[in-house]
Length: 487
Image (cartoon, rainbow, N blue to C red; front, side, top):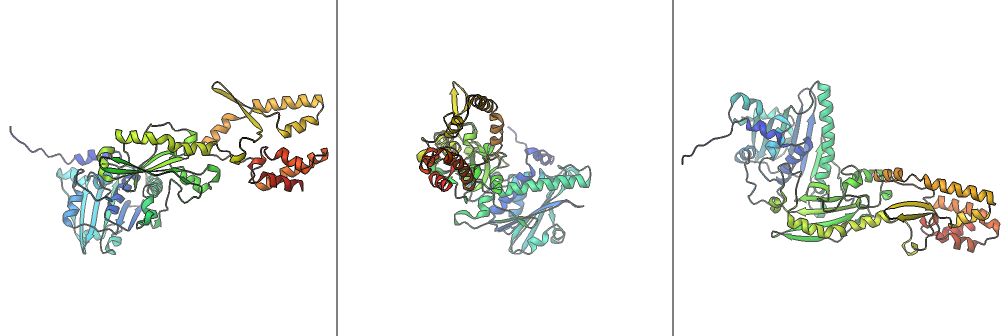
């Protein structure tokens, strides 16, 4: 048997561009390298002007010449090698595939111990030369690169520059600039989410400062952990292949308790319904989010449930982590354990959705305005004819007016806009009833007292009649509110 070495053609670089990176995922992949290099600050700069560029610069440990060449080599590090627990790398392809998926010229400038190394992959040069020609830049050539001054000012660090973009619309400068700026706006939100645990410096770990064109990224915490109404469930650890996976459930506050800004933060994947599920972190970096891995269906009752799952990088091979680090599939042994937990994880969200703000001790005594009629899979709502307010009105009407009232109530029931209400609540709109705060409830109760008192009813009777009646059960202290109204 004879052996023949058959190296790939340089056109392989063109083929690798089709891995499927979005611009935001490509930028995130490069920031992974900065964090692995123990950077405290990562800056992303971009410009869509006459000579567009994107530059990522960090103050990490930098590389010497040999390490820089290994970084620019395809699969320069093995996916099977041992890594530090905080190493966000995987296949040794990210720098090249992520960068060249977006542009035709990738330049790496890195500095360690005062020595600068600058290397470049230029796809057009590869096509012309038909050789695997990695270009080495002199320090003078590197010094004219965009944002070189940033790396020059640091004792160590790395600068990556993308130029010659060909994946964005380029019919005109204005069209290109619009598309580029829109994608970078999306990248800002993406980075704020994916790296939120590094930005916040949780658990006493050092914060990593990140900025986009000089503007610091804000933390986008999908669990709203700072909100006093967010509930933490019991944490668990799952043992898999000699490693541990940490599972921490959260139940978000009911939507009416969120400010508009908090609501927008919580809508990670669009609506809250679409954002429920597992949030998978690899070495604290968010990899995939908003999925139950088909263990349970997504529904409106579970839309407040989110689960943080921390996996170590030693289990990459089990999770089928892809090159882009934007997809992961749990192995069977982990799916089985998650399935065991998922019903208990979703239950607090279901309870929060079903809870309607009434005192729990009196929930079985509440006189409701609407009755639910459930009939073998179908349902409808009927007004409670025995509700004290309707009963009091009925007592004051003659027969003709009673018939008219009865027809009015039936018409209200038949035209109840249940589908519209469902669609609005599913779209994360908040139901704001007229009598929603204490002041409005007090005014409403005072109006009723002016009517009831004319019948000779005492204040005690008035309170006893209405203390468990909607909407007064929404009050923190219905009895005190009614007594104030009758005073």
